[in-house]
Length: 280
Length: 314
Image 1 (cartoon, chains in turn brown, yellow):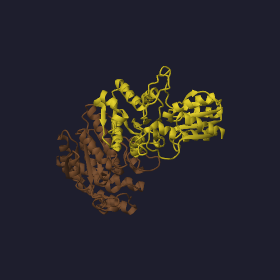
Image 2 (image 1 turned 45 degrees about the horizontal axis):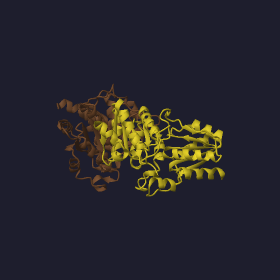
Image 3 (image 1 turned 90 degrees about the vertical axis):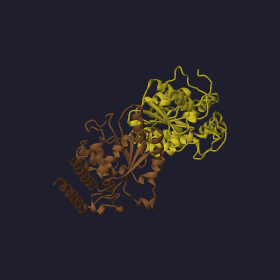
Image 4 (image 1 turned 45 degrees about the vertical axis):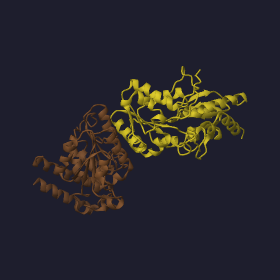
């Protein structure tokens, strides 16, 4: 991609992070760590990759995105709002009573959310169903689903993986946001996920491993995904949990906790400094 | 009147799916390696391009059905009731119920009439599980004709539906020339004002025989076939409560959480009368021939006649 395009994506990702912190801070709860790790990939999907129209969020021919790791809704909401699906004002009342934006994605109430999710392991199955429907109808839309690394401990993920390769869902692209941390500690210590690439390959996927916070690698992976025929594609994206906020980076404690007022200020200052540097 | 050839409602379901598919391109059927048993194989043979075996993975089957529904398909996902509603309960709740997707879930081999396979497969909790999901319609048809019409009604309804299917071949008692299925409306099979028996599913015909036998003994019982457990027909229950003063429910299901409690909730709130629940009394089943088990648990015509008599004479 052009340098200017890269810079634009980086700036947008920074704004996604700012609105993620804004949402979680105002909600006094939520999941900043995994939202920040996933922000670059979500930005790439919503601002460069997917064929979508915020004015026609139910277009039957649109590409779909299922956030299987539904707790990272703050980043999804930020991407959707910045892309024009709804006002960023909604983010300021995230998780409040009567708010449109629920703690986990709600497809009934939120424009742009293609599937309700939040219970881990379930979104990838729904993504499989969407991809299968696309095949049945001869449509060329693609379906993207983002999983957490910890989420891959769910058996349903592997049921879905078997299904995806059995039905040759080459219009499905799974992205694992491999930030290495889950609630009880490092993924390595909690449940030993490795060899994850080998697992997906054994389940019939074409797999690529990338730095999921590097837009050029993200682009290469999604471009490659579109060339693979006859089997589903998985991107194992190594990311930094809490990316962009110094004290949240690689810190287990920031999985599901909101910053206090002081922490909020530090986070916003840091992210704004990053944005200003890019805009300078 | 109806023919006497016995047919299991799972078979009727498979046939109904084929009938529907003739007219509706959006129907797809999913199964979890039990097509030969749930009888979705009838559909599979007729419409192989619209049938998807998910293998032995019910959780993913329900999720995939949800995804298909978001794209405009009308998926029917079938397995044994134990697995489609039990194993995949949370998937149904969160991926189908919460987004209120147009997914139809079928549970075959429900109740103790699974027979020899025994307790692990004899699901007597499916109606209870499905009732608790907001917006879920719960159907429990009683014979071939009712199953065919209920399946069509499930398709016509836009939203999640659970349909209970039986393994045991049973005779039909409904008259195909006059039978009409209305979602959420119970059907009065016998009039009477001494007591009302409300039955559902496979045991409706047993209850019918029992109620008829009781008429000969001077007990004028009303019989209602409650094919829709949710939304339950409040009007027919309240009317029965007012006019007969007493209700006995009959179901091949745990007396906890099924028809009996659904009826009792209506009477308790709208017209308190005594309600007795006949069903599986919070125990597991066990292996044995289906009809033998039905008799053992007091759910055949003879057993029901005795129980109803003892209840009203108590």
